[in-house]
Image (cartoon, rainbow, N blue to C red; front, side, top):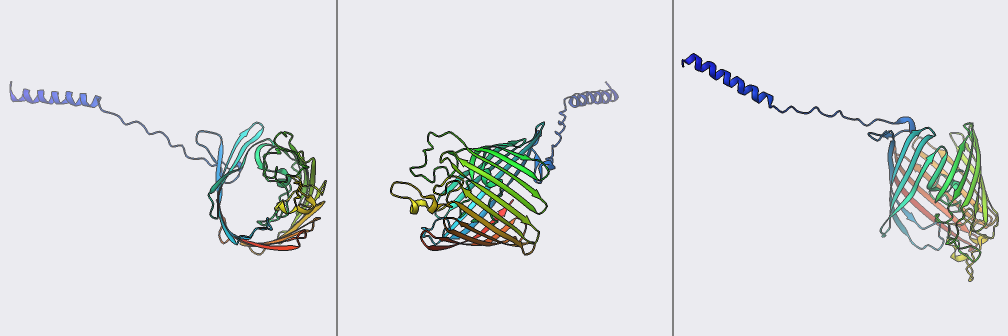
Length: 366
């Protein structure tokens, strides 16, 4: 074999070997396409589509810390200053359906009170579809009329129950007229067993719901709403009516409440005060002393001083001669940050005494 034949044979062998290796080469897989988060603005700011679904999600909440001096809800309180810190997580979902948006709202709250352990509360958790709401949220007796004034201690004079289970239908005619009907759980509210007394039935074997109904109308700067609640345990109730006016440079409201039996407390005309001072030896709570009596009235104004500062005032008075005045300043140095000092004065004619209390609040919402 000559040198030329040897070289040609070697080249052929190398080519064959290269071909074999090329056939065995590993080819890298194509990368999966990225699925970017899509904005869902049909339900408002902050919503985005959960990847792979048609459900929109929004996450928000707040962190709050505040120092409080005295307690306007308890005339027997003897503490000086307490410090309270709170965190809330709010999760909203929404999906388009043939019956309208299917929504949920969940609020979980964590509280750390001065020297105490952290407590967790499921504040709200409800489902909403086509105007129907089922689950836990504030009583429609408060929500429908808009609560009371734009102050922290707005319900020192009781304006109705808050978190409770309910089945509710809200109607909006689209022309300013709205209405509500709600069946509310007698046992799930924090107010359901607060009043005791021989006249109040035990809730242990009681299954009838409370009933709330209301109607309202809004036109331009004015709105009027009326709502009534029936306490099926006490077999009494109350009616509230409220008128609002907003002129830009000034907003104001006036709200009145009527108790169907001023000698009793019920979930809709009750008391946020310590009722021990007006409970007799036989366990009967005298609503005319601790609660409204026959009627109560609230009123207030809000004045925006500039784009960062607003002053608020709320006054309230009852047939039982309780008087409350609360004023605050809401300062927003930057967006979503609130600094709010507030002072409350309460007079109890029953004991002829006066109480002053104050709060300094810092709150960041997101």
